[in-house]
Image: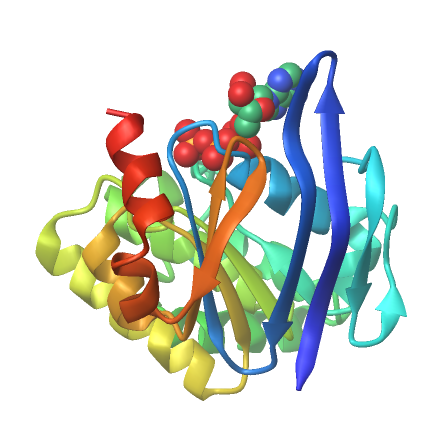
Length: 237
Ligand code: ATP
C-alpha cells in the first residue's frame, strides 16, 4: 500500500532545475533509498516533500491527502518528519531535552513529552546519555539524537538525510540496525545516503536521481547492475 506519492515534482532555482519532473511512490512500511551523485537534487527533493521549499510544479500526496505547499509543522503533525545532513543539536541542553522538542508536536504535558523522549532515546540506543549536554556527544551520538528527536514526534514516515555520513564502519553498522528496527516498528523510511553498501543492504526499493531527474528505480540488485546508474556515478568522478 502506498503512503507517499510524488507527481511531476519540480523545483527551479533561476536557470537550474534542481528537481525536474520526478514521479515517485513509496510503499508503506518499507525503506526507500534515494541515491545519486553530488548535486543530483536529493536534499532539494526532501525539502520539497517536507514543506521547507515550495515546488515550482507538481503534487505531493501523503496517505491520500494532497499536502503540496503545506508547512513543515503541519506535515510533522500529519506524521511526516525529516532529519538534516548537518546535525545541529542545542548543545547547552541535555540530550533528553533536545529530544523533547520533538515530543511537543503531539503533547503539551511535560511528563508525557519526557516519557516519549526517553522511549525514542532507547530506540536509538542513547538512553544512557539522556542527562548529558548534547554538545558532549560524539558525531554518531549526535546523528542518533537527530533520529530520536524525529521519532519523538511519532512519524508515520521518516526522511533521513545522510545519517551515516562521516561515521566509522562499526558506527554505520549500528545505525543501520537502528534504522531497520524503526521500520520493524511500523515506520516508513525514505533515506538519502552515499554509503552504497549500507543503502543497498537496508533498502527495499531504491530510486536514483541525476541532474534532478529520476533515472532508475528498483530493488538493490537491479540498481547496482543498471547501466545508466553506473554511468552516472562514473561520470561524476
Ligand atoms: P549532495 O549529495 O551533494 O548533498 P544533492 O543531491 O542533495 O547533493 P541538492 O543539494 O538538492 O543535491 O542540490 C541540487 C542542485 O540545486 C545543486 O546544483 C545545488 O547547487 C542547487 N541548489 C540547491 N539549493 C539551492 C538554492 N537554495 N538556490 C540555488 N540553487 C540551489
